[in-house]
Amino acid sequence: MSCRSRRREERATSPTTSRLPRHSTERASAFAGCVLGARSAWDAHADRALALAEVVASREADVSPRQLVHGDFWDNNVFFRGERLVAVADFDFLAVRPRLDDLALTLYFADSHLGLDTWRERMTPLRMLVESYDVAQDHPLSAAERLALPWAIGRQPLWGYGHWVVSLPEPAAQRHAAETERDLDRVAALVRDPRWAEAFVTR
Image (cartoon, rainbow, N blue to C red):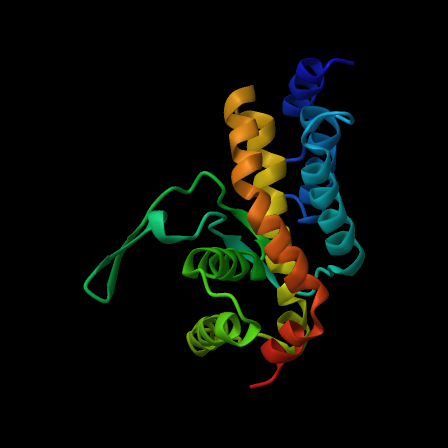
């Protein structure tokens, strides 16, 4: 089957974004084998994406309560006037999913865009975000949810990788894959480092 035919079939049969996060790793794997190509210059990139997908799939667990989740909760969809939240936009991915997903997406983008390097520099603002989220909850995060946060963060680039590269035209899909490359490596190191889970669990 050609790459273009595979992409058409994937659009028609792929799970919706409301399914369990495991499907994100499956879709990322399907894309890497198709769009990047086994003998292309993208080999190393595809290998890293597949390696991350395998690690996340082997460790992730559906421990979080399921509820309505926005699905794309980051800075371009959340609007403030001063420090007051005034609007949330873009509900295309709203669905019932584990509640960790929105928090994990925010942590993923924060870690990516803050540009900090050392583990301690990166962990400090992320822990602050987790604690601020928890304070606002009627039902605080469980120890199991906190322990699962690194793998929930690890799903985030794979979800975008597995979703957008299927739906975007070919040149845009390859640009998206290239832009994700640094984050794949960054998140792969995060999910393999036990200090992250320990830090999220420790209050």
